Length: 311
Ligand SMILES: [Mn+2]
Image (cartoon, rainbow, N blue to C red):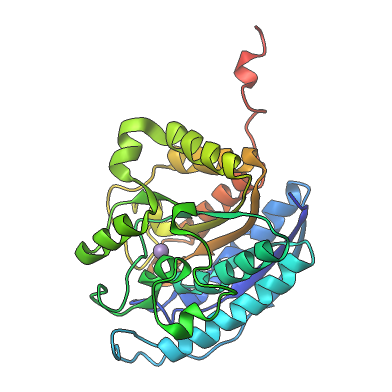
């Protein structure tokens, strides 16, 4: 893994139902993301914020809210992230609503195609984000990015990628899922997404879930794009999101997930999404997101399995 991190602020709430994720990048900066990663021995460059259309707060048209504006934002994201990853930097997108991941996935998939490397994605979220205009009750595009990545969606969004699909549905691993719209559920299953929902995590535990996912990724010898929606976390520890759903990941479950992804050495890009300071309490959700990001980049209590040291 590269030691050079590029932070890319994407102050958009264009794809969300609630306003306020526009303030997410600044909340993550204020909570100290650059300093935290620097302390781990990484070189951190903050490239500033991208620009895009303002939120017109319109109603959905033909099943999509703000499709034109989303396309402009996601193209900007794609360009910026491709530029960073091509220079061997590890891009960290500071979101911003989760629709912006259409741009980051497009960039990373394009990069992996250019170096002939397989790409898998770990999608940590309360939601599958696998809606289409037919299944979405709201038309909010932040409920659609996984579908678009897997090849389901309007041409305007699909064409942001280098190919359709950007990556195979069977190379997408979801963790923390507990809210899926009725028609969306069928699509997720038909597409072949590997979804570790909350019941599954209850039953087998985060460790076993991650062992299974990372073994699969190992066998594919793939790089990993991590897309982390803070609404995957339980709302009692992460209140600053637009779509709080009870029964989410605990602090330790989330930490273990991140620690194990780090140990795989396969992560090449990261999205930190949906932090909404307007709904937060004393920036606690941004601070928590940074604690988890530190684990993703190698912060450890002790080296793994240090508890065996006396044997
Ligand atoms: Mn999401």
